[in-house]
Length: 152
Image (tube, rainbow, N blue to C red; front, side, top):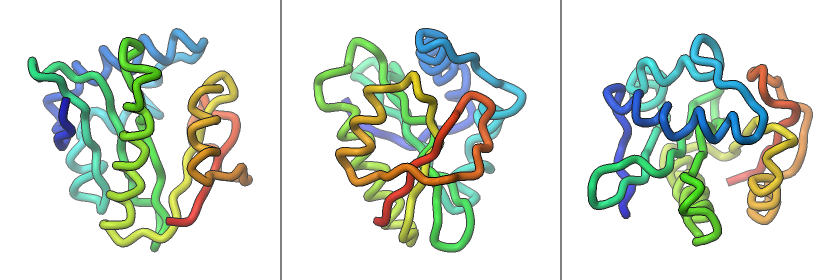
């Protein structure tokens, strides 16, 4: 397993991973709003002061995603952190999150925030264990009902 930068041609594979995960938690994909960033990963992330990486196996199958998106100044957003169900409970979620936190620091950000949905209880515990705390965020996504933030 290794992490590599995502590119726009990964879109279909990323959607095949992310969209069923969302539905399993009772959330609907939003390809025209929240998930529209997948149409052009380079312009939304790598060319915009962020990063979008995918976790791939030896067959180049995408099994996880994690992204850092520039917000304003020294603040960035953790986005698109998903992991194939078969890999859960093996420490890969922690590795993805640690990777994103390191990447955000390397890109010069001092704080990172995220939006999430109440139904993603496993993710909440992980975020809290890494120092994320609830705050009144902008709630840009139609499927998220609260936000979390932490310093880097």
